[in-house]
Length: 305
Image 1 (cartoon, one colour):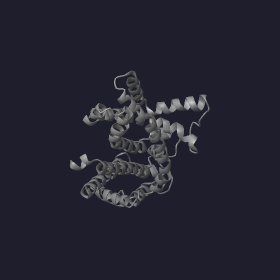
Image 2: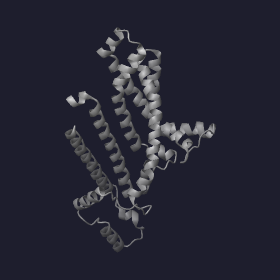
Image 3: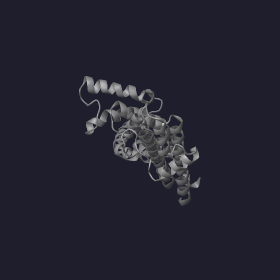
């Protein structure tokens, strides 16, 4: 167990280091920050001074080493737009993203897991077809279209919920529902697949042959033995939601790291772009690591392998 955790930690560090290097390369490829920071009428002397001040006159490999060393300390530099620490801006927006993602995943779980279990139990029936059609529909809807339709129906027409902004619980319902569409659809399909695998196991058939009530078979033998896999799916979905809520946060003016990253891309605010990308990757890697550790600690089949 200890060796496995150490190996996974090393793998996670390599992934994060790879993300850091990629963000550095992309930031150097897409443009020169000196052009952005100085006005068009700036003199060559001013450009040369700023280039030297930012360290852009050094060889690329030295810039990379300096950048990685600073990032390891949590220093991504200062935002060109806000004139504040890039990491400070990310930490200010991170709670809003975590809150939105958590509510979205809770909504998705509340719909997807019962839907997947019922569809598996009623395999081949009209209930199964309807459930999987709904799941397929949810996976096919673009997030921007779902968000706009929810705003149009519940905010513009019915006036039940605010169309955008950040505040009480009513403000999170529409963006969380938009995010939950895809998560619920994917979770429902994967839950159904896993429950079907367990339903075909010999111990489930044996329990039914013994006359064990169907409710007990489902709750004690089926759901209990699919819980770890479902937990794995849900946890990974949470990591994907945190890193992939850019469009949803922008549509609903939600002050999270997704909206911050999109605004930074528009303004070519490279330090903030790098900080948001690395933070999203870090969260996903940490969640993935914790899921693997929990999976190994609770499933003896993983230990044997």
